Image (cartoon, rainbow, N blue to C red; front, side, top):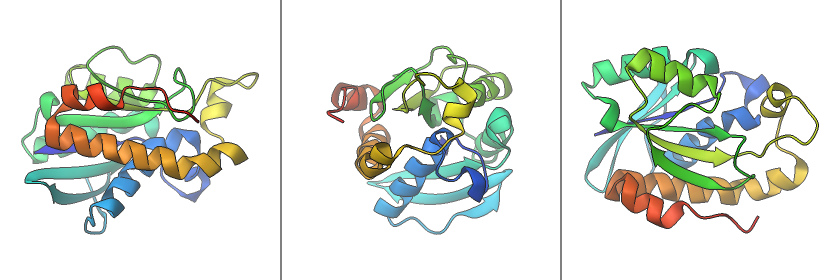
Amino acid sequence: MYLVAGLGNPGAKYARNRHNAGFMVLESFASEHHAPAFRERFQGSFTKLNVSGTDVVLLKPATFMNLSGRSVQQGLHFFKLGLPDLVVVYDEIDLPFGTLKIKRGGGTAGHRGVASIVETCGGPDFCRLRVGVGRPQSAAVEHHVLSDFSGPESTALPSVLERASAALTDIVIRGAQAAMNVHNQKTDS
């Protein structure tokens, strides 16, 4: 079983922000695999489904980004899972828009949602699916991630979410290492 946590901020105000890439990927994955509706629990919303014989819990923390670890820890505890069973999907400013990178463990690169999970859940040794949102040219990082995708990015976003959902499917079915070999490539976007 995997717990897949997509990071973002709750509410309509943030729905299309770059910082909500994790939520968007989970919604795309849930739709593709015909998951039951999300329901409230674990200080967030979750759904449970089976993908090719593997149980998967999708969790969207509603604690706001900087406190994501609280929700994730509750989900791990309830389902009796550990860090090896956790996949975290989130936006990454150090990757160009549309680039996907999968890795296991590592630092937080200043991402406060990831830092909250590391601190609250007992360490960094979980799988990450990072979705590139690009580094801002002139705006402050906080303004950049809390703003909506640009027009051209919004046009390309469905394709990015489709590729991220495919990467997540590969992580769940074949494991992180096999998924890295396929999906850790720069996009043409």
